[in-house]
Length: 178
Ligand SMILES: Nc1ncnc2c1ncn2[C@@H]1O[C@H](COP(=O)(O)OP(=O)(O)O)[C@@H](O)[C@H]1O
Ligand SMILES: [Mg+2]
Image (cartoon, rainbow, N blue to C red; front, top):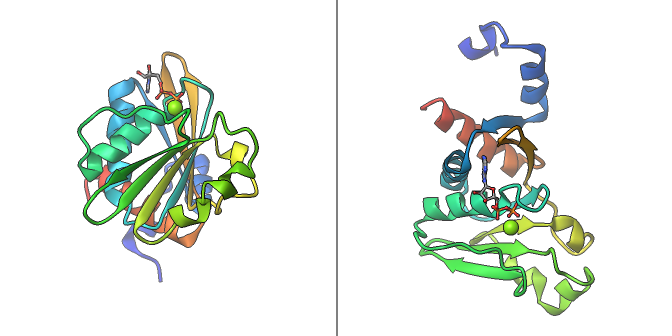
């Protein structure tokens, strides 16, 4: 079935590619824009999602997590849990686990942390430096990459699973004001 949306001319070929692979690319002019995008994303998470965050030190991964946590109701500071590796934020419906694996010595250490217990339908995992835990982490539903662009940032979110696609679809609708 062709919906009225499908009948509209496509914005661009790049737009079409982004549609098929379920990617969303946004330009974030300043820190506030990163926080706001995090809030959009946070509102669209339902629990049970694994979100990985890639990008160099200082890209804005933790800033994005602050936005996600704000959407869930956390008003306070958010620091990267560089030494503790994970920081839990407990909400009524869900616990958001913010991981920063930058200082993880060996991926196997995640096993000693009881890593499996962190992932269920009542938790959201936001994981900075996921490559350091390769082989010991569940696969991502959404992968976010943040790159430095001029004075701001370019963020790309890719849906890696059906669950991730649903989230990204909701983010799209919300950004359109739907
Ligand atoms: N869109 C943006 N444009 C410019 N600066 C940003 C943007 N988003 C975040 N920042 C800034 O970049 C830095 C990112 O820090 P942080 O979020 O801790 O990065 P990371 O967790 O990726 O190491 C902060 O100083 C923040 O103010
Ligand atoms: Mg960080």
